Length: 475
Image: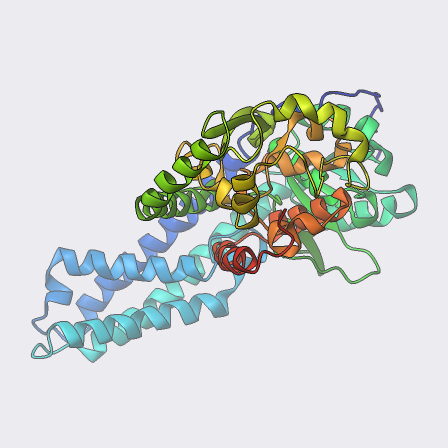
């Protein structure tokens, strides 16, 4: 069989332009699969319940006579089945032992609820035993029938997902055989690792989108910039699957799916989106509101000290680059003289940052007396809680940088602009201003993006309090 190869079109674009997220390709078929399995399970459970009422011992009980109790039973059973991942694609839905365990657990749980709710009512043991046995038989039978129909249709070339393979020439033959063995894919094309190089990447993803590719199988050796490549696949709505190599692969949050008898790695998008984003956003809103109410007297004291110390405004507003590289105004208490930004050009030669990306000067002559105190304890950052309320920042995340610094980025660094910037972050609690190399700082930002969790945010916030009180690396 001859597969189409990808035409390499050298194309460059401004990485700082925002990319819109696309709906995951193949989503309608996934939803249809889940709804079909759900319908089969509901039919099997309702039928099993009906048969258990007919052939079990007829005893008066709300669990056999009242509709709300019957609906509650069905909800509990379906929830337990879903919690075991039995509606997922591949071999997960064929895990019949897990299905038996889920149904058995639901029967035991329903018996316990029935006893605790109405201990004076008799619950027919025969009814529950018949229901348990028949529900297992019918749900497994329904899934076997579903798989039989799907395999029959796929053998005729129907219900197959269009995919693309990216792997080097030496491994192409073995990887094609591996994918074809699954008999649920149509290989639309194949290319080598050069298509994911920086100069070809945009053209590659434009081609994949135009071809309607749902999944891309990529060898591990073809991914040279994992964070950015995963982000590109995610924004294109294409599922990325890592083809196995001779080396053992293990990466945070990675998922395994069996392709035939071979484990295939899937790496989720290394960004904070969807449910994760809204969990983080709700936490930020609640925490910022509480903190502003608690420290409002401190705001007034700091404002008075700044006004008495030097002429100029109390607050300092500066344009920073935020989520999706969109500029916004960051709020801080003023710690420098009023014309500090105009004086920076004359001080560039004294920049103590090794690679020159960030501007850092330990003995900065522009800082006022009150400003030194505010910076030592990071009190100048407190107005940024209002940036959090406005949705421009998060409590924890990569620090938003001025346009001057962002313009000096390497292309690989722009993935840090795809998450909401934060007041504090892993960079700040790992050395703060003592980190004088931007490469080291950005590695900490990327580590945070890859391993984000609400627990990690809480750890960083607690560590921030400790670092501020100890004045570690502050100037």
